[in-house]
Amino acid sequence: MEADGNASWKQTALILGGVIGALLGVGMAYMLVRQAEENENRMQFGTGEGVRLGIILADLFRQVARLGEGPD
Image (cartoon, rainbow, N blue to C red):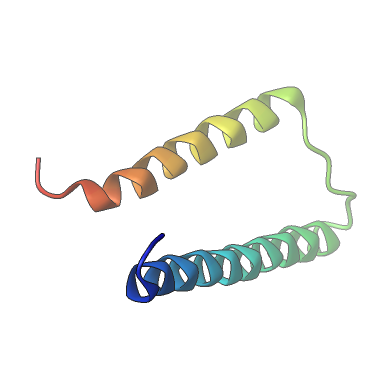
């Protein structure tokens, strides 16, 4: 069984990460919708854009995972 202090920081990190991720996701979606409205177009993603976005997100996740590793 984990000590309460150990579980507490983990729970805080998960909740904080979830809230920040949700806020960033809503903010980015808002910017995309606003840009589409300004250009009077529907937002459309092609296959290439989807692949690029997936690669960028995978790299971002890898970088976030490395935050706790300490100095190189």
